[in-house]
Length: 189
Length: 189
DNA sequence: TTGTACATACTATTTAGTATGGTATAACCC
DNA sequence: GGGTTATACCATACTAAATAGTATGTACAA
Image (tube, rainbow over all chains, first blue to last red; front, side, top):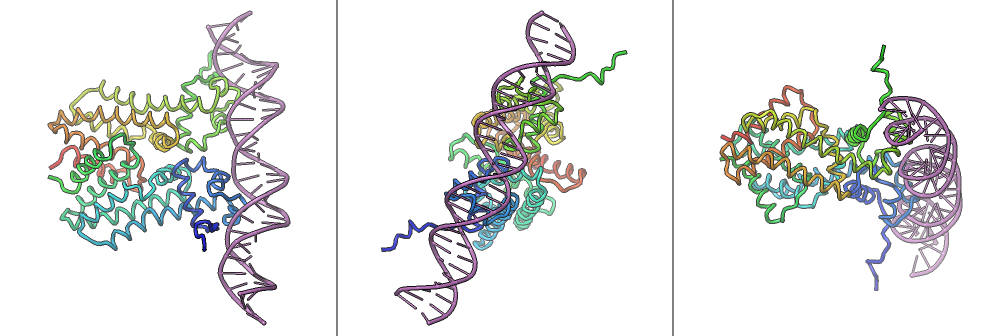
C-alpha cells in the first residue's frame, strides 16, 4: 500500500517562488528573510542556494511569478469562460476580491516598486494589461472611448482599493456595498 | 553677529518621527534601519536611544505622527478654509494627490498593518475619519444617505489608488483624467 | 550646575552567502 | 527486475558583515 501523502516532495523553483510571494504579502520585502522562508518550507539554506544564487535573484523570480499568476492567469480564465462584457467585468471584480489572488503580495510589490526598478516596471506593465482588458468591455457596453477609459479607471481604482482599505464590515454588508459601487460605475443612471 | 543657519539644531521626538515617516515611505518598515536613519539625520545611535528606548517604540511614534499629519491636519485646514461642499471634496482630493502629504508612507503603513496590530487599528480609524468627513459633504449636495456612502467610497477609492497606481502620464493629461473621474463621481449625469 | 541631546566604543544576535558532503530519484543498461 | 550512475535536491557547518541595543563619557544651553 503506497502512502502518497507521506512522500517527501522536493521543491522546484516555482514552488519556492510561490511561497516567496505568499510571504511577501505577509511581511513585505524588507522583512523577508531566507532563513524564515526555509523554516516555513521545512528545508535549509542548502536548498535555497541550490535554486537561486542570491536573495536578489530569488526576489526577481517571485516578481515574475506574481506577473503570471495575478494577471495573465486571471485574464486567461475569464476569456476562456466567455460571456457578456458586463459578465467579464464582474468576473474580474469578483476574482480580485475573492481571495483567490493574493492581493497582499501585490500591495507589497507596489510599495517595493518605490525602490526597485524591476518591480516598478512590472507594476506599470500589469496595470496597463489589466486596463487594456477592461476598456474594450466598457466600449462593448456602449460607452464612448473617453467614457470607457474613465469608467475603467474608476473600476480599477475600486478593485485596487477594496484590497487595500481595511474592512470591518460583515461579508454580507460588504458585498452589498461593493455591488452598489460596481453598479454606479458600470450602469450609471 | 549671530549666524542662525550654522547653529547645530538638536533634534526632538517629532523631528525623529517625521524623518522616520519619510524613510518608511521610501523603503518600508522591514528595511528601516536605525543606523541608516541616524546617518540620514547626521547623528549617531546615542541620540536615537536617548529619545526612544527601542525600535518598536520609535515606530509607534512614527505611526502617531502619521495619524496627525496625514489626516487631522488636512481636515483641519480644509474646514478652516470653508467653502461649498464640492469645494471641500475637491480640496481633499487635490491635497491628497499634490504631494503635500506623503502617500508612500501611508502605503507602507497599510501593508505594515498586515502584521502590526497597532498599525491596523490606526488605518481603520483613519479611513473612518476621512469618510466621516466626506459623507456629509455628499449629503449636502443632495445625495441620499445610501448614495452619499457609495459616492464617498468611490471617491475615497480613487484617492487611495491614485496614490498607489503608478503613473506614466504627463501631469496635464493626468489632471484631465483625474477631473473626469472626479466629475463622474461627484456630478453624475 | 543641572538636565537635555549626542558621540564613542562595545556586545550579542541575526543574517546573507559559501563550502562541502550527503541523499533521493529518474534514467539507463543489463 | 536488480544494479549502476548521473543529477537534482538538501543538510551541516562555517564566515563575514550588518544590526539592535547598552554603557559611559561629553558638549551645550538655560
